[in-house]
Image 1 (cartoon, rainbow, N blue to C red):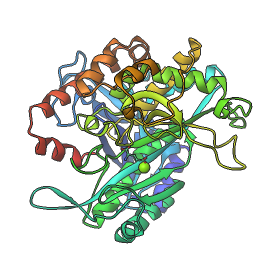
Image 2 (cartoon, rainbow, N blue to C red):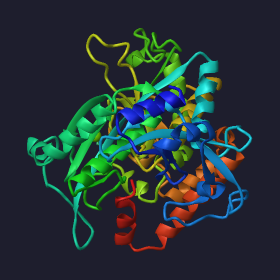
Image 3 (spheres, helix red, strand yellow):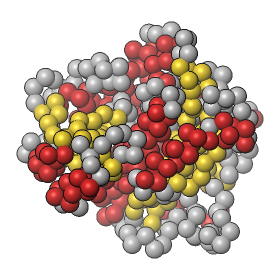
Length: 449
Ligand code: GLU
Ligand code: MG
């Protein structure tokens, strides 16, 4: 879509403001908006943004990162193919943007260009990643103490479906209006907890879509006077909110699922096994990209169906990588892997790029998988888990960041500036939340994600 065509679409829909959306190192979705009269120009030139924003944490505390102070700016340049008229905001539209340097080159700390680089690295090997996200979220009302779940319904219960049917219908309608294709919906285990999953998409589109989905869920809920929280652990006594990532690797024409080989164990090709082995090899560090908030580590506990030990297994919902059983008659297209320790406090561009970097490393080194985990790993003794190679995850964001800083594959893929700013932001959040009492820690995450 050219800038003029985008303007025409916006005019037709009587749009006044077009949000230029991005997700920062703290996983916060932020935006600046252009007026429709200036849109064609701003699409060509971008909107200016201070370089400091990639050093801003999710408490709006600016971190000291070299090159990210009060002097200097980058441009937010929209990708016209992502244009959506927003059904939940009056006379508004949105596009996802790239961070671009003033000389026109991609900004080294730009999350979307990190994913584009990893996508290109995979394509160089004749592969494209397709992924989809299962977003779990909690619907709540404001109370004097904070937030209370809208129901106390049971897992997959129709009572829970009924309790939220109006707001769910409105969310689904808003996603349809943005051409976002859903897979499934249900009322999940936790009080007020829901799950909406999106169909698999090429990785960049999947990350863009994840931002649009997060925006839509929160905004539509808010129009009902509710708060939708995608925070990893909304309440201490309730199930966590995962954002499990299902993924598979295809040939560039998307005709052949390169993860599928009907002649092998669980119909997983050698490529799939190597990719998964790479992910397992980097899991401790990957957590700092995929489950990267202080609150994330309250979710990643044994026997909470979120995974807590590094392992993989067929239909094992306590494994880092689950091999979901395929659908009858759709064995090839439905062969995929599910990465469990991921949540919506991540920056999806950075998280998906990290998964590719880890998977590519597994392929490059020809890594093999250990024996599959066929039981709940928490029911094994320490010695049995050691023999299976199923190490407990880092138990705090701080420990995951330590693992990330030691991981040369992931930091090498991210590059110096993105690594420095990302680690500074996330570590400052670990420290800031660590100094708060527990109630403040929960409240601090609830309405941000
Ligand atoms: N709510 C669980 C989590 O935190 C996942 C439950 C499930 O979908 O299996 O990841
Ligand atoms: Mg679920």
